[in-house]
Image 1 (cartoon, one colour):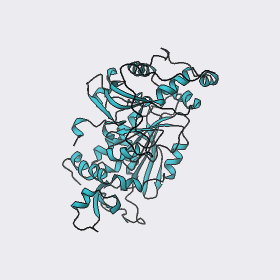
Image 2: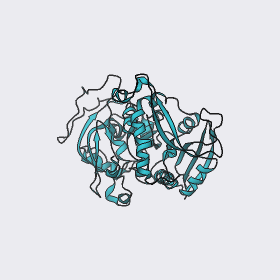
Image 3: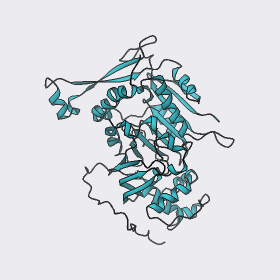
Image 4: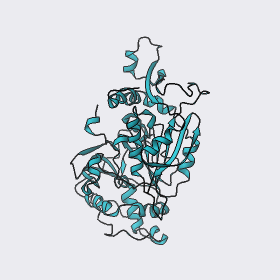
Amino acid sequence: MTAKPPFIPPPHFTLHPTNLPLPPTTPPPKMKILTTNYLTCALRACKSHPSSFPLHFRDAELQQDSLPFNAAFIANILPRIDWPALLTTATELGFTGLPAEKPDLLATAEMEADEGVGRELHRILLETQVVEGKLVCGNCGHEYAIHQGIANFLLPGHLV
Amino acid sequence: MDIVDPEEYEASHVHRVYEHIAPHFSATRFKPWPIVEKFLCNLPIGAVGLDVGCGNGKYLTVNPNVFIVGSDRSSSLIGIARGRKIQDSFVADALDLPHPDSRFDFAISIAVIHHFSSPERRCHALKSILATLKVPNDNSDGGRALIYVWALEQKNSRRGWDEGDQQDVFVPWVMSKQFSSTNAKAKGKGRDEKLTYMRYYHLYRKGELEADIARAGGRVQESGYEKDNWWAICGPVR
């Protein structure tokens, strides 16, 4: 058994400081990478354009959390993931450890392994979280802000 | 009822109201409704879904083995929901959901659709929810959505509305003093005066939710009445 490798941030983003000015009972808000696999532009007209998915990160400020590993959850979420979109997002954020093709439903032994794809998916999808930054539509160029971990998808016409 | 600008109308009589009452509203919303709880708990492990109009996020943690993405029009309520650990939530409009089509196993929208102030907008909201769900095929049943709306027929409730009454109504929210912001207090005339906010609702009559779902292109699988609300489980057609 080898220890979990330490998280090394890629050069173009910075780790968020852990001393967030939040009350101790409130966990710091943030957005999981898994969620971004399910997000596209809010404009209906963009949805039919392949370039609107996935949204692209700009100035992402990430934080690495430690969450309990749930092998069954990862195995069941895997068939639901859009793999090419995840590869795009992961590459943009500096994670290069994922295979080019979606792995077959992983055997439990492989899922549990310290260095396996299951752990890597857990690390990227659930433990890596976005605190600040923007998500940008590749079709219309609209930027959706993420501030204090909360993304805002209201379109300009709605901003009262 | 004829509303000239439904969008502006909802901004005044729904969105701004929730921005003001969010902490008090949230403090009264903590117990999951049994049918919603059952729907969420029967989902397979790893299922991915949406909570459209998630409010304070009380349903986001009912089943920790599924992944729910919550959204709400009210940034104040999302500010409260963000404390929920496992799941994500953000600010979005149900009419412009930022999700790809046909990817989700399930969706819930609890006490949300009744805040849209025209038949077209209610139909539009149902359409956008249905569009996110997996389309049924030979190998799978497709995604399912659970929708709840307030019923017109509730003669034994505190409000006492019943069949034949006006369906487009203002419902007062009386803000208890402990939740009033200092700014709101300063605006109040007396120190003991409570602030009352009026929220717009369209009260659904029997059969109307099913008809709206059909008009939005969905298929109703189950429907019923529970505690002053009409509910339906529906999905997209093949």
